[in-house]
Amino acid sequence: MKFAILSLPSAIATIMLVGVSTQTLANSPVDTATNSQNSISETAVIPVATTQIVDASRTNVSSTIDNNPKVATHTDKKNSKTGAVQPITTPLNTLIDPVTHKSIENSYPLEVSSFLSLEQAQNILLQVSPKLAANQAAIAASEYQTEALETIDDPFVFAQLSASTYTFQEDFDLSSLRNEINNGINNLESNGEGRSLPIPPPPNLPNLDLPNTYEIKRSGSLTGAGVGFAWPVYTAGRTAALTGASNARTQEAIADSIIDENELYNTLIERYFKAQLAIIAAYLREDAYDTLQQTDHMAQRLFEEGFLSRVDRLEAQSALADAKSESIKANNDARLAMIALQRLLRTDYRIKPTTPLFVSSRPLPDIEYFQDLALKNHPGLQKVAAKRAQAEQVRALSDTGYKPTVMLYGYGQVEENPSWIAGVSASWKLWGGLNKNASIASSNAQIRQADLSEIEVSDNLLLLVEKNWNDVNNAQARYQALQSNVDLAAEVLRLRRLGLQEGVNTTIDVVQAQTQSLKARTEQAQAAHDYVQGLASLMESCGTPLAFNAYLSAADIRLPTLYSE
Image (cartoon, rainbow, N blue to C red; front, side, top):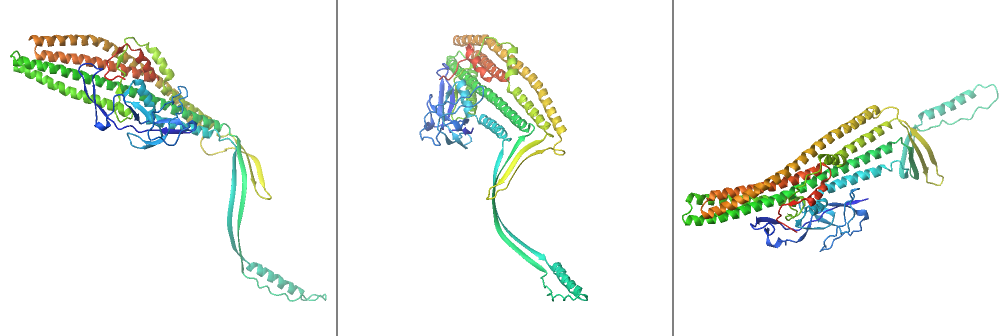
């Protein structure tokens, strides 16, 4: 099974949040493009950089992409049980990442609107995150390693071809041989002399004049071919231990990937709703500025008519200048928060969040419910279990240290008169190599470490869940308590403005009332933000980050939102 990492460029368009109206949140966005040629409409659908792993071996795709690609039809969905990504049918191409400007092969276009709900942003995040794609590649690599180890006990068949040329040259020393021959001839002649029998003497034998050395030189070439095999029929469980350890490493990689994915979900929620809070703060600051503009205009009229002192007039002007400065700062903060969300989703334009901040007036389930979820689902415990499984397989491998390995083997030459050999061999390690006892002791220590780590991780998880559960409840109670402050501050501001018109109150009274109203509304929005972030952290600590969406859907209190789909 082969995978392709996908990525795609985005359009060059940037939208800035420059101001918020003073009337209603729904009708108040004012967006300007960085230049008129790159401006986009509010409902535009724009390509965004994507990074994803798909099963290329089961996907019938083209190697090129049209000059005018259509909107991608995404059929790729993640299986909740296996974590596998189903194949897509969009043409692939080599495209440029919008942030790093690196070319990424095997990419496909993903069309993304600038208006995104939280759920839409979550779906896009899975496809554009290079970190998740890198984790999927690590999982695939580990699975391939396991697959490679599964065939280690299969018969190994090989062919051998050889071609060689040679030159043989040697000098032989013949001096001793020559001397022995000559001495033998001389002895034969001397033995024939003085014989009593009438035997004729031997003929005169020549004195052999052999050279002292003799040089031999031969050259030629040889060719050969053969086929052989080797089959480890018994390895004492070594292969199973190696495969099991590799499987455990795959499970650890999967657990790490889930941890990173959960953290990314939490980061998305943090940036998404931080942008919403910043937008609300910008709106409130803009609303306060507009209110003080009206107060300043009224103070000018009263000053001209002689009903207001110069000091009160200057105080109104100073308050208006401060309000303008705070409004500009709030708009810049909102723009920065939207940029942070934009960077996470890897676009070249602002992402406008449409899911509002929310609070549920209903109480959370008991703490035991969330603690049980954490102990069952948190990937940190899955990682510890994978570590323990690895240590167990290493111990099993160490146990095979002094067990035999049995192998069948054979080899035959391919020629006119072939020769062959076949047999069976068994080998034992008698001494040397790794210390078996020390290796087993090391594995046992690692298993103990994993068991103790599981206890520690469980304790920390239970404590973390309880902290997050309390944070959510505290934020919920604070939001509800601040509602009376918001109502009181709004009523006081209304009366102070009427009092200024009647000459009963001063501009300082109106400014103070306006400040209290702004503070109360901002604190309540901050409490809603704390509720949302606490709930996201609670779901992450339980190992169920997407359960956040269910609480969002069931929430009965929703704050106003600037953008809507």
